Length: 310
Image 1: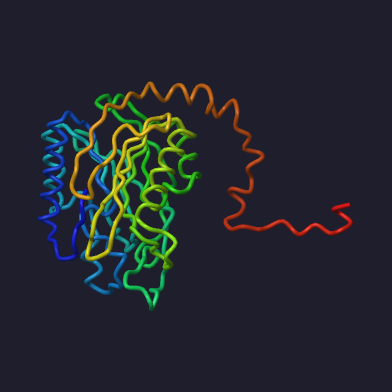
Image 2: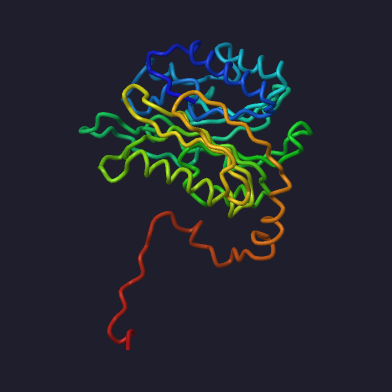
């Protein structure tokens, strides 16, 4: 999906999404994946306060502003994944996504766990990364959902943007037998934390790398979808792709604009990995992995003394 500018109306953005939905349905798609924060610009790049900030959040889903997407998808018999900013009835704020089946039923909800950026703005930055300021850490874990017959009863999971870079997220889904992971992202085409060591090419490579590697290591299909291009003067990488359970890219985006990618997903391709190389029940040794859940940051080993070296 191409960029959404700060000045764009919800109606304009929704019309684009409806057009993409129609194109996908015409080409035989039964599931459409939209990006993270699909209804708005990536607002965490700005310092925004008060009522102006509330404008970017959805207080219910669906709601009148986005109901046409649900209605049209139901008519077409097409389900979708979509990311948005969630404001709960008790005032909590999350970077959220939902999975909606072809009948318009919300199959599952996910809240982003791995929030990048900072709480306080950087004084020398033209663009911010303030997700930690605007969102709480996701509190739903990484649940998997069993789809209905229209999606061949696939076991499905969701991630949002930075989650895809953390193998723990993939493995939790993998341990539930996930066969398809849907991911939406808005990733800067530069280092959002400052510095000049990352450019669009490197960040796109990293995005593709983690999707391919983790799809392979968990024997799952992965659909990774960007909001891309120049958004309010700030670049977002593209790199949307569909990856098979062997880690191979089946189809990938060629532009930074609105674009439809379609592929047939054979869930049986998951069996090779799940039954052999990544048969978790046969080969995993969780008793040796305790540090993964006991520790968040790095604790380096102490330096060896001369006596110990001898």
